[in-house]
Length: 340
Image: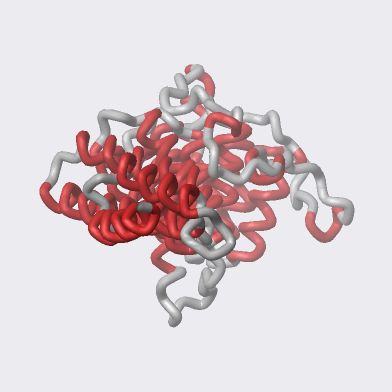
């Protein structure tokens, strides 16, 4: 029995934080999802539904008559290895007595048990997230937010391991986990890295448009971070993938070239500059090919000689050193010679 009370005392140390009205430094919380373009914005993803008492109380409800006794019961179940009963016990306490001092203690104990003793990553992530959402001042916010980030990382690694019991073949849940971390702790030192993970997972999903938005937001919100420098190059890569995937779009091509030029001016490593220079040359080549193709469009039997001359002259004015410049000059000479 002494061990039981010692366990309860250890868990209840969190209640002292609640009594002291602890600050929540990493929150502050930019919950307005329009501040994070590229994130999912469904209400159930951004916000966590509040737990309510179960309908079938005799099956899933509390086993004791008050929160103190219920906490003692759940801890005893966990101590004895009765995991299912312990999980139900902690959860029932939070649902039945949500405003009691024991509720945040039970909520944290539930999350810790699922992570450390049951290796239930999804379950642990949800319970830690619930703790931050409903008891932010009754827990060590920094530590719990860091734990949320840690579990998101474990989920991502598990998604790469086909031997793991639950393979996260769909990256959506992992991405949303990282989004939840950023939304709840935007001021944390690991928030930029979490945003890099969101963008990377967007790319894994093939949604390069949203990946670019996340990279842009990361560079804007955390401009002095190392991750912002990484995002500079990664955004360029994502923009080039979009350029290659879709049929020619003059506006997209101009935007991509403009971005790559600005990124090149800010790049701090030789590797990044080499990539950006290569992509810039490729994007400029796409624009050059399209400009020359547009000029050739007017060089046909259905068009007048003067319209072809004007088109080639326009191309050479815009791109005097273009890769089709010699070709354009030769054809222009022929057209003008024929006119004479």
